[in-house]
Length: 108
Image (cartoon, rainbow, N blue to C red):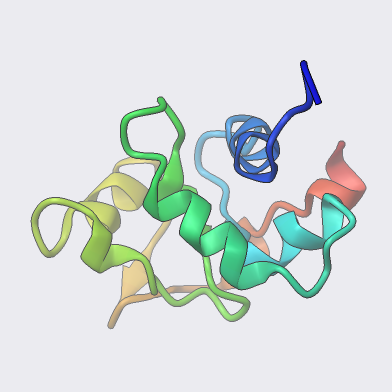
């Protein structure tokens, strides 16, 4: 097993490729990694990513809701980070989600 990359590390590699000002979903990352039913596991990876230089704020649920926001220090940090990149958020949801959605399956 030496040299094998963990699922979490694979998630982090994909998340690091999300362009500035774009977002993706837990499910899109899972599907790209060949584990379509593992969106929740991608969420767990994002929850554990805060010390690994991963832009976890760019990963949201399948309809653009900031479901991971409670894992950031401060209640609005995730929203502020997205808005700083030009991604509009209203009521904890990305406005015009499809416009900002980045799909690793078609982009990578």
